[in-house]
Length: 125
Image (cartoon, rainbow, N blue to C red):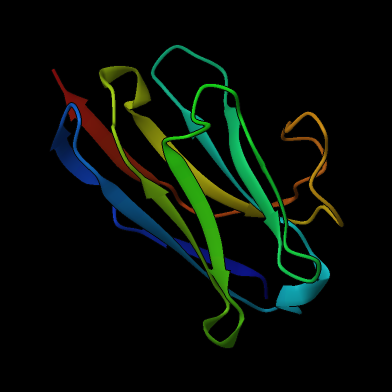
């Protein structure tokens, strides 16, 4: 059974940092791209970042480039999202997802079939 478990969310002031973790199990970690999405109240789920550890390919949404860093620890089957210089507009539920064979040029939910339960990130101004 595929499982993705996110952790690390919380409340932080603008300009602060958080690190999210996504622990994956039930599939061969190296075979798939793993992505972070987020969904704010009343908005559609949007792609944040993606990584495929087999070739270290990485992509970011323009809104987070230079502030967020995605990484993976293959020994732990875990993907991380380091979020720095957080802004109130980063407030959302952040989801980890897997299922795509590679990181798409435009990060949309379609290729990703497995999802975690989400972790809340709240950035106060």
